Length: 401
Image (cartoon, rainbow, N blue to C red; front, side, top):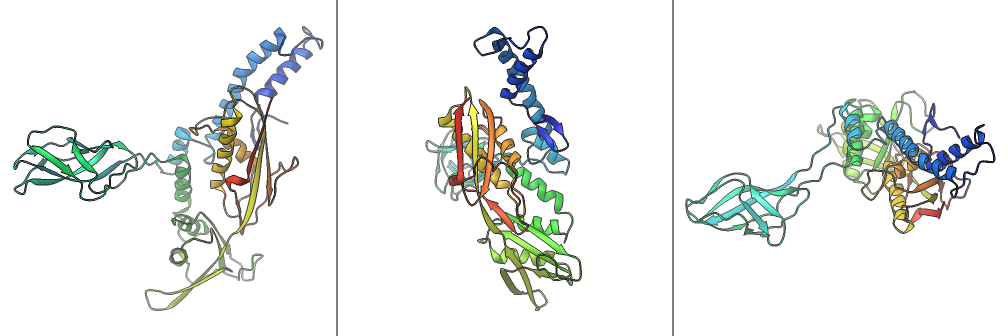
């Protein structure tokens, strides 16, 4: 197997390969010769193993550098750089915000930054000064000290943290609006892809982007037939076929998105759904689409390992990495074995780097059944179908190296 950069991509050399290369080099050397003992119990073998570890780190670095130019594989700061090329910036974490009613002695000034809390729960601080009015209360804006989706239902904020003379009570009359955590790599990749295609209004890619922006549409594809005759998908001339996943998505929202992007004089084609509604001029309009057929995928990761890989924990991490990669399945998108390898190579319980201790790794994939030893090639997916993967269809087979 050729390692390194080639016209087909980058193939990383793993620790086991490096160890074997070093042993072969020692045996081929005129100084040591073929009779040199390079096993783990011999000095030359120990030296080879010590040298192999930092060399494996350099190969991992090469993989990371290669991945940083691929939106589907880049992560962290590298993904930020790729996204910024199309004007997309990672959404920062935000505070939960709300309004609290402060009670106290009339004319008491409660300064911005005064803190209150949910009893034995999260702390909030005011973001503006408040002066207690004639009714003994004043409403002021507040936010959580920490960022993220911090919740406080109506009435939950009821304890004063920062003592202020004349301030006697606090309560929130309504639920606070939860903030958000910093945008994940997966969400940023999706926004970047949408930003790339959205400017081309009424193009196939723009219609697809608007559909995939809907809350319950996971994936879609739009295929135009620009000829005057029926094409291979059964689409009439001068029409476009829309294929959507899943079939539980909101049909009214889908119909609206297609209609708003429908070019004048063009027929929307589809086999499964026909929606008729009245436009702003009172005319009946029809849009059509098909649901993507689902191909049930089974994946097996067959690997050997050494310390610190722990099958009890690490097998689950491998399975989680495989399942997470399935979030990027697209309508008409082939199943590529290397995508799963890349996902495992960058995954830990924190999702940031490779699972340590994997010596060799083989991914097997098959539709409709458990894959066998020969199922190690990419799987083609028809443009009107989508691969689906459930946690129960993932198997991890790990043995000591």
